[in-house]
Image 1 (cartoon, rainbow, N blue to C red):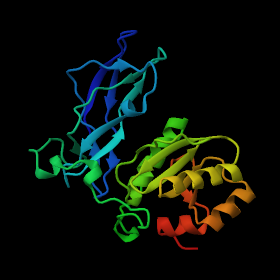
Image 2 (tube, rainbow, N blue to C red):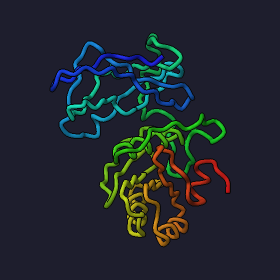
Image 3 (tube, helix red, strand yellow):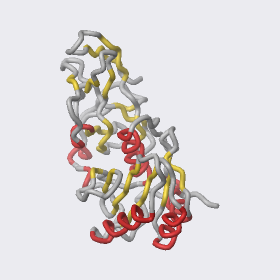
Length: 252
């Protein structure tokens, strides 16, 4: 069972009961960030990408992955960051942490990763069902996309070094992905800029949009072989062109 701990707001004194969420490891086991009940929750004053993620080890296979850091919203308006024990992890089938294994010494960048010319490391037949997070904010859209990239088999998903003209860039080894939470469809320029950015990195590229794509943008993506996905509010990316269908293991 996922653990539950009391979380007290340092601003107003209210106490909340927080249950850690479960995330799917690539091996199929649910992973739960281990909460630290001995430390105090801290208000989120401003967002820093590195602080929004926590490293958690899957007890089933030993893999380390980065998952959204637990947070809870207080009724006083403050968002609280729930303290965790980084580097450890729980599975939904085991509420205790085990002894460290050799896998603990392997960093996420040493995992099998997709190269620019390769398909993702994990074939469609081997993937467990995708589990995501509901999208209510732009940050949720980024989280859902990062989870999906890991589900596809990409490792070391992080914030892209290069800033894209629109949206938010994610990167993995051999990959640049754009997350566009805008309410207008992605434009031809958006798609071309992503493609040019990927070319400078000698990487493949993927585009994830909440509002879909303009007709000319989709046509150019088809010509360039760029997979296009639309994010629905459940956080599940839906392929909208043939390259995306192929990547996701779907068929027309």
